[in-house]
Amino acid sequence: MDIKRKELLITSFALFSLFFGAGNLLLPPLLGYNSGDDWVWVTIGFMITAVVIPILGILAHARLQGTLFDFGKKVSPTFSLIYCILIYVIAVAIPSPRTAAATHEIAVFPAFGTSPLVTSAIYFSLVLVFVLNRSKILSLIGKFLTPFIVIMLLAVISIGLFSSEFNTGISQFETPIATGILEGYQTFDAIGAVVVGAVIIISLNFKNMAVEAYSSKRTLIRKSGFIAGLGLFIIYAGLISVGAYFGSELSINAELSSDMQRANLLRDISIASLGEFGNTVLSILISLACFTTAIGIVAGTADYFKGLLNDSQVVYVITAILASGLGVLVGQLDFNSIIVVAIPVLLFIYPITIVLILLNVLPEKFATPLVFRAVVIITFVFSIPDVVGFISPTEDLKIFTNYIPFSNQSLGWVLPAFVAFLISVFVQFKLKRAE
Image 1 (cartoon, rainbow, N blue to C red):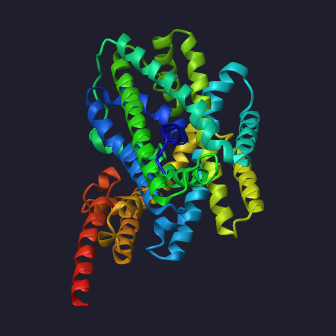
Image 2 (tube, one colour):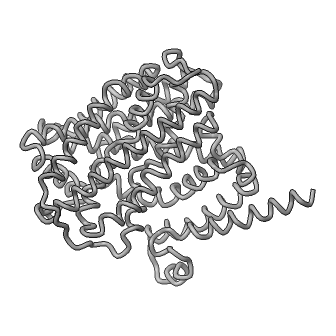
């Protein structure tokens, strides 16, 4: 069956919107502001973990066309089950509530002065309504919400760049690319790829999309992934560059928390670009971007546990209610507190997620169970010092990590994982020749 252009655009827009949430909008401008004249190098690093890896995750979904469980089953079914549960628990406990916190701090509180409990309760009640009507998610987001988000973002970026004097400050980063890579972790896009990719696949199974054949579905997902990735690239690069070029025109109160610095900078850029109307635009933009991401996370989590427990619709509803309830509770925290909690979790789970994505897009001969197990185990082992070093840094640990390349940048797992891949592939070929 030929893929219709309408289906491709709807799926691409929906995929972009499910990715693009609170962190995706708030993180890049401050990153650009602090990177100054190194903003291009920071952008390169940011794109690796916030665009390239997530889109590879969507390509892996296009190939597997299963659930998140299929990503890790070559390591072992037990590992994959534990990994899936961890991913979904993390998703509904951190990035999903974070969308509510961002919406409250930037859009709701300045306008209405309500408590975060009221905001998160109303917010996740609406999320739950959309998730329980999941057959309409893809079409609604793709047709209506995302085009509006994209138009407003492009307006802020283009007018902002046009009105700036193209002067940048001095970079505050010693290793711009590494900083960009780690900041890309905070978008949760790699985790988002493995979670919302499954949402896209399940949504395509509904009759309103009329995509049935494996090859047609794979082509549709791959093309929409590339289009969504291009959109993310343009928006991220635009927001980082706007933050960098406005660095000489705007000032940030260093005494404010990081989340308020991000919010104030983005608000100042919006007002400088669109006048006082920019504040209203920003509020609507934040709310919509966050809302669509929360829908994708909660729906993806409910889908997984529904499939895990005999395809039970009751399980789907209960999971959606519990995830929304957790969102209400955690969503009362401020945005920065959620980020601080997220960092050690990301340093642990993100490297494993990245290697699983990369292995699942490789040809079968390079991605055997032996290779999967070797790479994942080594990645896990060498991620531990990064986590421990962040939570409780000690001189003894530093003496050890000094011998691990890139460990000072919290990327000590990269080279060992690559070496493990090469060795395990070599061993696999040797074993095949011996048979």
